[in-house]
Image (cartoon, rainbow, N blue to C red; front, side, top):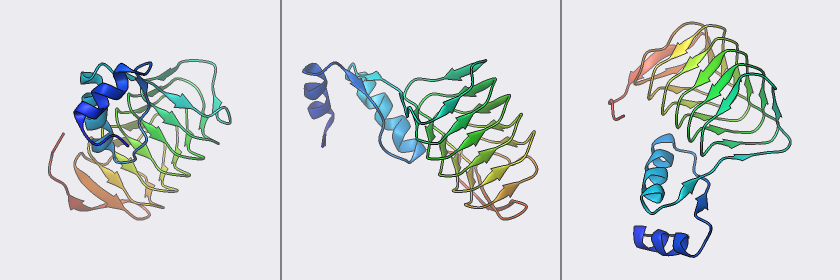
Length: 169
């Protein structure tokens, strides 16, 4: 395991420079990507062959991890460094912001916009047309029926804001 920037620089100088992000926290993934890129690393996506990705209008950013059982329908933009954990579903005309994490079983309906650095909890459901602001956490099992502002934690059915977070984007 690499512990320092110098170790990363040396390792990348002897490899093919590609790297994938293997950590869940959105802010940590963003920081690691920046540091490894500064060492001339090439951020690379990894997509399970056991996932289903539609044939039209799919855009997947660099450094995404898309795990087994995910379903992406059509006209979807998945930003840089996004982690789609096992069995996530993303409906048509949706946007997943950079360095966002969808935990296992997340269900995203059509026309949903999720900001950057978000964490969407296990088995959460986002109904059609909702927008989630940057740096927002949606609790496990929550059902989001309306827009959720940036820098908050929202939980429940329907999801309600329970905490405000510092804006550290």
